[in-house]
Amino acid sequence: MAFDGIITCGIARELEDLLLLGKIEKVYQPGQEELLLHIHTKRGNVRLLASAGSRSARLALTEERYRNPTQPSSYCMLMRKHLQGARITALRQVGSERIIEMDLEAQTELGFTTSKRLVVEIMGKHSNIILIDLESGKIIDAIKRISIDKNRVRQLLPGVIYKYPPAQDRVPFKEVTPEDFSANEDERLLMNRIAGISPAIARELAAAPSPYDRLQQILASIENGTAAARIYLDDGKPKEFHLTDLHEYEGLEERRFETLSACIEFFYQHRESTNTIRQKSIPLHRTVTQAIEKAALKKQRLAEDLLRAEDSDRYRLYGELLTANIHAVRPGATRVTVTNYYTGEPIEIPLSEKLSASKNAQSYFKKYAKAKTAVKEKAVQLEETESDLTYLDSVLQALETADTEEQLDEIRDELVETGYLRYHAKPGVRRKKAKPQLQEYTLSDGHKLLVGRNNKENDYLSMRLAAKTDLWFHTKNIPGSHVLLKLEKGENRDNLAPQILQEAAEIAAWHSKAKNSAHVEVDCVPVRYLHKPNGAKPGMVIFTNNETYTVDPKLPATEQEAEVDHTPVQ
Image 1 (cartoon, rainbow, N blue to C red):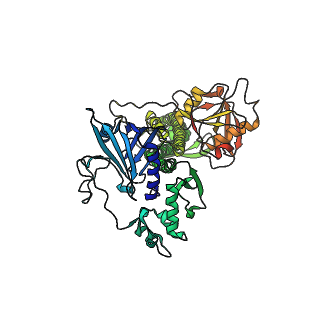
Image 2: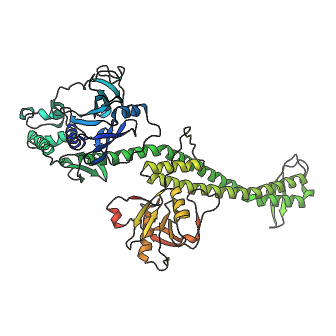
Image 3: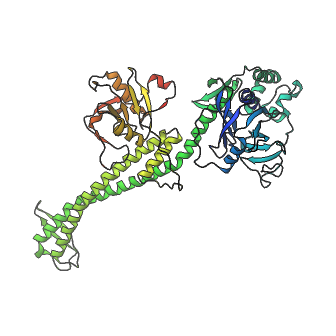
């Protein structure tokens, strides 16, 4: 993790230049270990995020729209009391440590000026956000309270005098001299001797001809404003970031940013969102997988029952033959052999010794009638179970492709509505229903293509947004997104260029379970032939008049080079 003392130095200088004399307008706590400040500065309004998460500790400006809890925590309310309306009078790094202090001045309700200090400690699992009263030096509160049970040396509790973390027996990177380095430096030795550098920087210095000169070069670039923030990406995933070249990552994709804040937020948002979504999707994935396994077992049992029920004609035959050969059945017999007058061959019929011949015949006729009824019932149940499996497969596909928390929330709501999941809302709390957001693509001739990301969006796309003249695409017998090609007046499937239909089918194949397959069949249907059966689950439709295209899944060339925007469709 690259948020070392050098990055702290860079972000402190960047924030000091922008935030000095800025006024804190609003305070939020989007996460249990996060504090978000809306600040009015000389260059406009900005949002400053401080995080004390063990794997995401940072301080940086952000443009991300965070979702705030319906009810603010007591810590958030306390921060609002002390921080809202305060002006930032100073912002600095503490020595070479991963600690940034923000001095604040605010007025009380009686008009008295008070001085506070917001301390952001960026130290892995020991990270914290602490508010201090400057006059007394006492802690007002910390986002993570540390009692004597957890740390005998340093407590972070309201009313306790604030103390910096204990100094380590290492030389701060801002105070090193050439004598602090030796020939053939080793990464571990550098980490043990110099405070405030990350393993990545230690490796960079160890590989340099002169570690001291390389470190001074990095610090000088921060001082004179020439340092450029960059991220190294491995297969599209953030690997490392810093304010200088890291030669060990030369083979990876490098992306540069205008500000260090933008670089930091890109790194943590892309890494955090992946982890958060993965963790949040686990219980939903488990619920859907268990439902699929249960439905598959039910389908197997129904198929076996149906197979047995379809063998019911032998019961009718036994009843007919016994009725015709009552005289041949001896009382108390367990079986009888008679001639099958349909084939002329002998046939052995099992009997109940407790019943007479006529009663045995009636028993077989009853079994026949019951089996025939079962065939109809089992067939209906089997059809319903297969429909459930198709639906659950589509939900699982949506879960595997979901890339935002909002999409997971929509899938959870869908599972609640369809009865696969229970939802216990807090009393008095109502969740706002957001307008569906559909992925939008522009085809080579300018036509717009809309894609649903889950079954609820598929329903909205196909049943409400689509005009009867539009074209609907979906992979044939494979779970996937509903895809809608918007047409102008007078356009139809017959007068569109084949290339456009091909592009739309390729995108539909891409947004399906067959994304990594070749030669995928995709149905194309005018919306007027698309229908949703009464009582059908979300995303389930039937259609006629389809044409099928065989394509390889692919996005438009422009979309392969950049991320697709989620454009709200009204």
